[in-house]
Image (cartoon, rainbow, N blue to C red; front, side, top):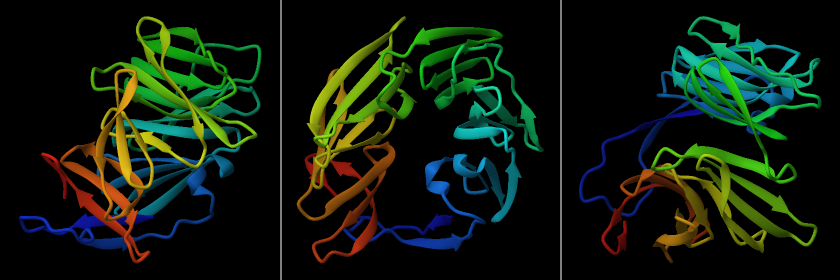
Length: 279
């Protein structure tokens, strides 16, 4: 794991690599890329590793490992450093499971529902302990106070890429299915009293990549970034200077681009959009 400290950047900002100081912590084991990371800041970082049923808390660049052989935690969301929720599968029971980090230790967080077939949580949306969406492999669970409501997951075959609250606060999720002919089908759903599909596109698997960006869906190729606007994607920016690798951030004035320049070198760039200009 790498912790980054951004040095001050003089204005006007020029096209060059981001300026960082790095703290590097090597974690025990491998396959952390199969899980997720959540953090409010660099003081505490929380990671789940579903392959090894491991939860890692990093504080002051010191890692503490927690292992539960009966609990596979596939996703993690938090409200504060003292309220972090791990979601996944209780192996023996074959039922969705959750645990809560309370600032000192992991405590049980029961889900008062029983399903007839193996059900596990892929992604979660959590605003508070009484306001949660748990997106499972075959169903969607909503927790309101002590009440649980279930909704049908319309597509149980496609992979759940990510879930998010959009700019209006509407729960949303994105799925992907790759056919044998390398064609990728992308579906986006939003909750308007019922879960409704608002977007579907069938495209070549290698053309576009999708990720969450600023309470929205980001679609990119090697030189263009598009953001979802209603039921279609609109161009956010284009560049012929670099080849885009990944884009993440908070808004048009605060995001990061992982890229390759014309000489083939990898770089991390802080970017912002000015009217008609990518800088």
